[in-house]
Length: 95
Image (cartoon, rainbow, N blue to C red; front, side):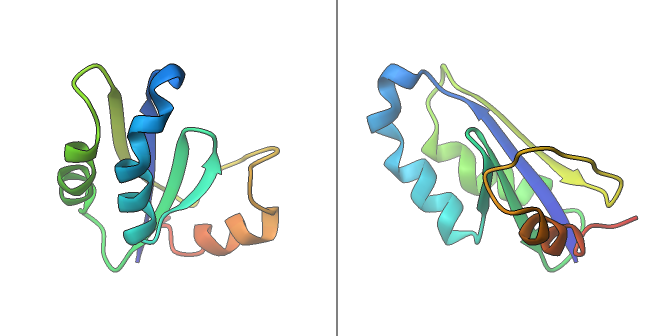
């Protein structure tokens, strides 16, 4: 298993244009952890390019997008999900 972070910058005034982005993230099983940050558990490591390829078409040229693997060496404060839920996601991360 592996855990990935999807992070993006979009223009908030255009937020209504991003339903496809959020639908794709939910389809991939992502969980929103901060306003512009989602976490995705995958079956194996080495999936950043694949995830990026699935998500990027739902963004616009002016947007920024980052997909990266998260290791189990993470610390956080005040996520949008409960600490125990994030800890459950983190259990899928590699050491």
